[in-house]
Structures are given as C-alpha cells and as structure tokens.
Image (cartoon, rainbow, N blue to C red; front, side, top):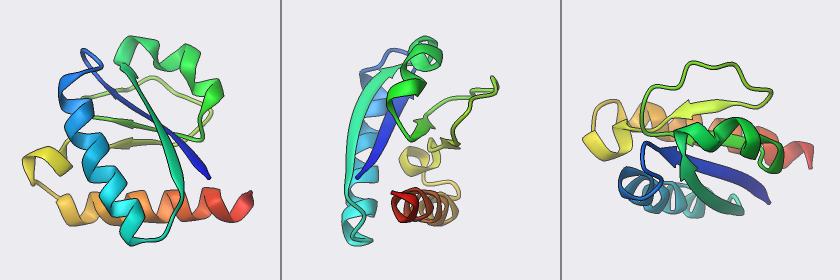
Amino acid sequence: MVKILVACGSGIATSTVAQEAIKKILAEANIPATMLKSTITEIPKKQKDVDVVMVTSNYTKLLDIPVIKVFGLISGINKEKIKQEIIAVCSAIEAKK
C-alpha cells in the first residue's frame, strides 16, 4: 500500500480534483494506495507519514521522499507524462514494501 500526500495551496480545491485523478490512475495500474490531503505549508511535517508527495503547485523544498508535480492532471498539459511518472514512482515504492 503506497501512502500518498496530495497537497495544494488551500488543501481543498485542486488537491481534491488531483486526488480523484490519481485514484483512477492507480486503480487502472492495480497499485493499492491511501491518500491524505493537505496544504503546501504542511508538507514538511506530514512527509514522515507518507511515501510520496504529489503537489498541484510549485514546491521547491527538498524532501526525503519523491515529489511529483500533478497540476497537469487538472490542466491537461503533459497529462500522459505525469500519469507515467505516478505509475513508475508508486510501482517502485510498492515493490520495496
């Protein structure tokens, strides 16, 4: 089970839309996952509870876990590339468990 933190500016709007898209992508790839939502500012303290962070806005701070920018799932820009990155990263995490 891959633990994912989906974050946006408010922790409500774009993260909710992205979360639904991520759920669909992972279900199609048969990758089990649980998801939490938060604001961008909460990422540093919440990163310890998850395997990967997915953000809908720019996030440049270094973390100990992977960070995937997923705004393209909402805008449609580079959607397929982002989908493949999500599957690759989450597959690798799942394989290590």
